[in-house]
Amino acid sequence: MSAIAVDGLTKRYGNTVALEDLSFTVREGEVFGFLGPNGAGKSTTINVLLDFARPTDGEIRVFGKDVRAESREIRRRTGVLPEGVETYDRLTARQHLEFAIDSKDADDDPEHLLSRVGLEEAIDRKAGGYSKGMSQRLLLAMALVGEPDLLVLDEPSTGLDPNGAREMRDLVREENERGATVFFSSHIMEQVEAVCDRVGILRDGEMVAVDTVSGLQDSVTTGATLRVSVDRIDEGAVERVRSMPEVTSVDVEEGQTPAIVVATEGSKTAVIHEIEDAGCEVLDFSTDDTSLEEVFRAYTTDRREEVSA
Ligand SMILES: Nc1ncnc2c1ncn2[C@@H]1O[C@H](COP(=O)(O)OP(=O)(O)OP(=O)(O)O)[C@@H](O)[C@H]1O
Image (tube, rainbow, N blue to C red; front, side, top):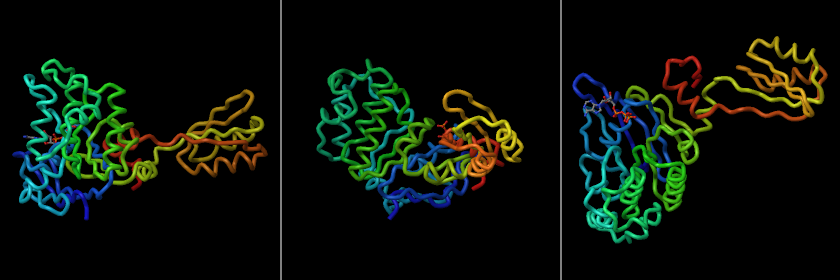
């Protein structure tokens, strides 16, 4: 059974189409990253999933249950870190958690939850005095209440410093290892790259790609940079590479280990063969992979000719 099954989901606000016939699946036990530029429809999807917004058409099922008909049961099994929600100034972290624990009929220990998000020192301080990052940590602790089967995190790294962002990644991994499915939206590509099994990219309310990070990287042919270490720089070899039709630039690095640095839109192996055929010995080579950032750009801007999948 899938953890989340989105089927033909359309959501309109007046004339604004937020989602258009959106369908995708999040498998049980995976960490799924939900990406998209501002206004693509990520929060709208999450709001429908949590039954905070009604779909115009289509449906979402969570663990096989319709989110509208069985929203109570789904909320009991789901931990949510919503976007743009604030903590209550006059309540302490402990009180926030006691409230969350009560409403889920859970029996978690507030101190333990706060130690997991690095906030145990502030347990009896009122949230009104918290920094943005501290509030975000508290909201995250609230999402962890009751060992949810599904964690839905909307922009979880908002307000977190680099340490906080790293701890967030660790928590996602821990929760996933415990067995939770994690569905999270983010603009931070390193975060997504580090923890996601699969990634979906939303654009203008439609899913334009769903795959593993490496599958997405392979689908985008933005060209690669190849660094070939050779025994010596041979001008003839350099010229032969330069005249290959798919090669866009060639640089030479002199020094103890000379290298030919080649940007190509075509086959990397062909470049290596050309250098060898010209009589140079190839000692080593490395390539720069397409970053998820570039993949995202290729799928969400009008440089669509770069997308081959
Ligand atoms: N309550 C609403 N009323 C009217 N239009 C809305 C409403 N909520 C969202 N929209 C519109 O729906 C579209 C999708 O918005 P949504 O907030 O889902 O995008 P998002 O991907 O979450 O963006 P961001 O990354 O900025 O959070 C946008 O055009 C937005 O203006």
